[in-house]
Image (tube, rainbow, N blue to C red; front, side):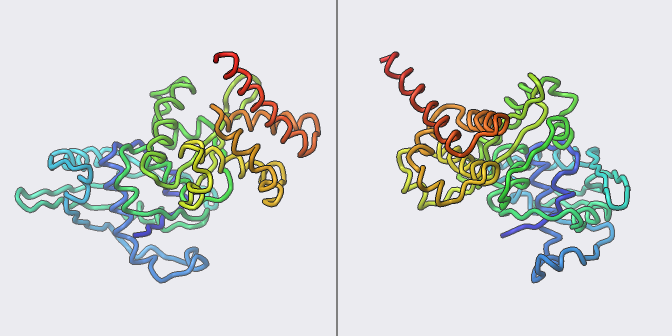
Amino acid sequence: MELIQSFLLSVTRVRLSLYEQRILTKIVEHGQSVIQGLSVQQYKYITNPFDNEKITIPIRYILTDGSKDYKKVIDACKSLMSRKFEFYEPATKTYYADTIIHNVIHISGTGKVSFQVSRVLYDVMFNFSLGYKAYDLEEALTLPTPYAVRMYVLLNGQIKPLTWSVEKLKEMFGVADKYTQTADFIKKVIEPARIALVNHHCNGFTYCRVFEGNKVTHLRFFPVKVEKKEEVMYSDLTREQLVQRKAIEIMLANDCFFTWKEIGANKTTITRFSSLLGAVDSMMSIVQRAKRKHMDKGYIINAMKDEVRNADARIRKKG
């Protein structure tokens, strides 16, 4: 089932556990009757039909990892009562904050849990002034970490790369006070989310670091949708290398104005370059260097070939 939620809800500041994230996904599912049958153009005219809404969920739908421990879901609901979400709407210059759910009820033996959802949350969910995100419910519920779910929702269906500041990302994930070092944030949040999406064969992403001087200030994300036919066509690449290849192609097309015909003409170089460790960061470095020196497409391809030759030379030297 495809779920659709506003971009505002997707980037709202909140830190969630895995089960809390799954419960939020089921809350989004509850509101989908309003979206069904509407065109994208009609989203901006949606008026939130909900007041404070009572929702009842079978607990087994949250325990999709094989666990039968209902207490985990009840505890997640209790935790959500103290979780606040907050966001700022630029158009109206309005700040909102509220708890995600309240009034949790579980009657032993029913296998269900009920709770109230604030109208404010649905106001955010149906506010499409900044766009929307679409994702698959079943895939979201199979992902093993809340960060993987969040990145999946943010980047699924995205065509162009997205760039966020590290500070904004930390705020979105609610970990600004937990990971003071950018390297730790990438290692503990971003990288595990990326690997989880690759391992679960979901639409994924890769990323590169954007520097100001020697400091990483932003991360640039390249959404990657890997088609099965591509896995056959480039069977010499691992799935992770295939993800890197797609990101590099997107960078060449969007940042360097390569046509897809030109990308196809350099397939061998791009494929071999994509197999290198840290290929996306290396590609970003090449592109930045080319722009700084006002160099053309030929410079970029030759720089990629140099990286491949250097890697081959290192392999031969070790051998």
